[in-house]
Amino acid sequence: MPKKVFIFDDNNDILELCTLILEDAGYEIKTSATSNNIVDQVSAYMPDLIFMDNWLPDVGGIEATQELKSHPDLKNIPVIYFSANNDVSTLAKKAGADSFLAKPFDIHALEEIVSAHIEK
Image (cartoon, rainbow, N blue to C red; front, side):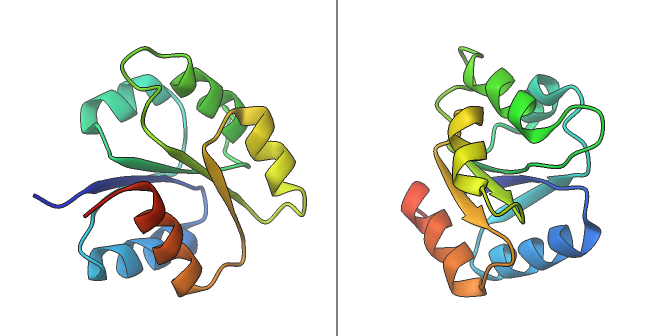
């Protein structure tokens, strides 16, 4: 059974790139361009790992991550905060994310951070 990764980003190019890379590495991928109803979206899929962009329409990445981390059934799913913001580490801390990945990233860095947080 492949491990599941849920990617939240409003940039379709990023979603497509991450999907291609991670599916190729053997993961099952789900994507969403918004973090609206974040608890419902994540509960319906129950991923092993979540990538959360900072700039999302309506509900931003910080608020969405905090909502996940305060939910009893979802708080243990690792959240990787990813953003082109040059202060991504501070944003990740504020959100309560487990780690962060700065954009632009290389394929190796993406694969490395995924394997660091979930075993295949």
